[in-house]
Length: 309
Image 1 (cartoon, rainbow, N blue to C red):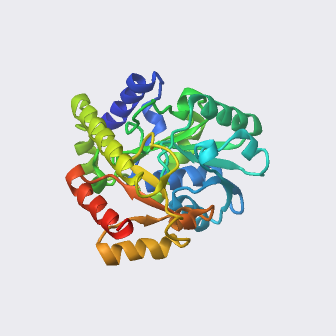
Image 2: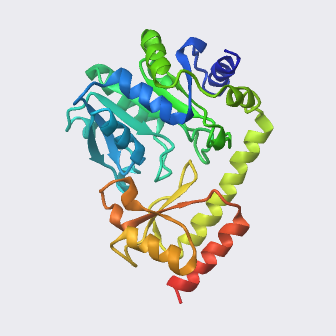
Image 3: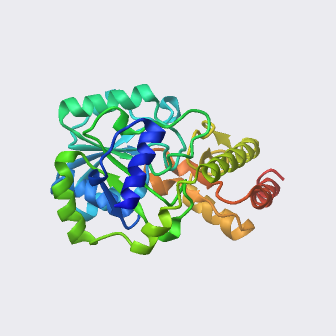
């Protein structure tokens, strides 16, 4: 209860949003939160709307639960954001978005997020918002879905902004009318989140340290964006998270083989775009700026020597 109260306080202070601790369910990682959200909002053969590219576990969880993923293409022209016009072309029972997004690092604008949520509320489409990278926003703030609707399901956790991935602790905020159902689902899926992790997370909301984390990632983002822009085509400077989505089509049309080549030939680890969908992902790599600048400098040096020589 104490940790759920702290999370509720976090939403009051960060977003001016009132959340009851009873609406907050602590989960073993954010993965447990997705399972709760999908179990509450979708049944067998129901349809879950997803952007392409997007985090691959969304569709994997959908398949486990016999839910049908429905993909909608996003691209650099829309800053990798779904639009209401995309939703109007498909039939779905729930919509899953992430902001800041993995793998592209984009953030949904306040206006677009509000429009998507309003459309979903009108059409009785469940809105599920992955906000795991909140706090890691660099130029404009990221808005929580709870600012626009009490019907939204919001997922977050301690692994990214709070730098506690090994503790496996996430949370989901559910609408009040789903509290009892969520309790039943959580009890049967995992009983509870790790108790030791919950006690450790009580110390996670220390303001000065979190400001330092954000500042550190801004510096890393700026460094890697500047350097990789001389090697690859970068659609946009990342607005959040800690990923950079690079168009590598001048070198390859097979992102998997190219990522494998870079790893085996020069020891630089990247993630092939095809891990995140089928929408032109054969020509993209995802770079992560989760290591310090000194470490990334060596990686950039190897890339330039190998690709620009």
